[in-house]
Amino acid sequence: MAEQEAQNPSFDIRKVYLKDSSLESPNAPEIFLEDPGSPDVSVEASIKSNALKEANYYEIVLSVTVTTKMGDKTGFLVEVQQAGIFQIAGIPEKDMPMALEIACPNVLLPFAREAISDLVGKGGFPQLLLAPINFELLYQQKRQKLAEKESAAEH
Image (tube, rainbow, N blue to C red; front, top):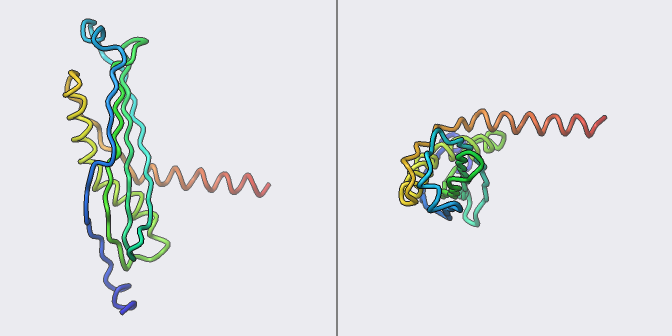
């Protein structure tokens, strides 16, 4: 059976849910009376994975924080933790980090983008369309930093 499972990789989405969200607009209502101009927008994303008790089940949490600045004032800060439960089997151990840090967040990102857009709109701000995130590039950068740390530790 294990051999058959190894030959038949599976990647199933079991549940997608919003784990946490918040919107802060510390300078409201004054910020709405000012000319917004072209606000500075910064986006930060992180991924956490957690193996669950059930075999081959993982919880992935994609955290996205978006901050806008209008001059020296914060327009808003929105944080979303979009999560999902995935059943992943038959994937070689060496490839699991890619599944957990690239494939799963790619599934979760559209849900996070929608939640962020919703919160921003309900906060009275113009619609915000979050650009796609290249999780493969983030994964490669993380691996490169780990390799550099290991190399520095050896010397």
